Length: 289
Image 1 (cartoon, rainbow, N blue to C red):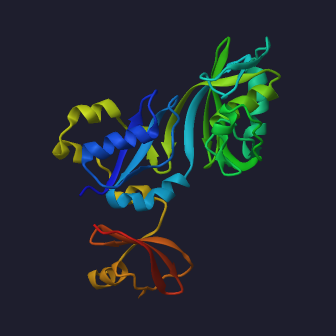
Image 2: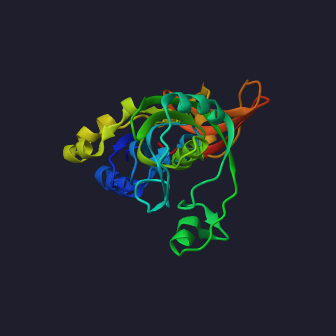
């Protein structure tokens, strides 16, 4: 059984779920899941957990994300990206100076109204399903953090940006709001994820390259260790006897001050995610490696 992470460079035109299904078959694993959905329009870093690594998915989902994206000015679209219908137009095109001037307004703690074509639920039904039925969809603003937002390039009809942001950020909505603040309309025409949690673009392998390899003995070389998703979590090494107790769901005594989630290791092998506090370590998720 393979336990760990495969970081796929997802191409455009395919769903994240489809990529997971392909990887699951390729590695012949029973459990697999991705660390954050990318729309079919988007490309880039799609971390996929295999086997016991699926128990660490929450830590990637909660982590920061980084994207490079391009906004086309002058058109609002129903889906806030290039796949939607045009709903409004404007002849105004912002200058580089105009764009640079408003960027500070979108950094730090901000509120954002998600796109109506999203998977968020409204009265138990997906927002995108209601939108497709032509019903009015009202979504509440969400609080999120934009750690950085930089302008990379400016063209006559569009501009390219890079953003580092918290979980729950919709880049489509960011594109919409940037345009509105600049006195025009805009929509997303390209989106690439550069980072998801601890995983970066340099870790990613093209999906087609993985499919071409096709042999498990070769593929295993591309699997990153389970603990790579937990780079920001303190790791504690324990003896084999203590590791067995934790795997059986029992707490152990360990001199550790403060209270935090820790990764328990034994001879370099992950044993459990646990909560440590006041000298006691209680298992939260046990790894059956």
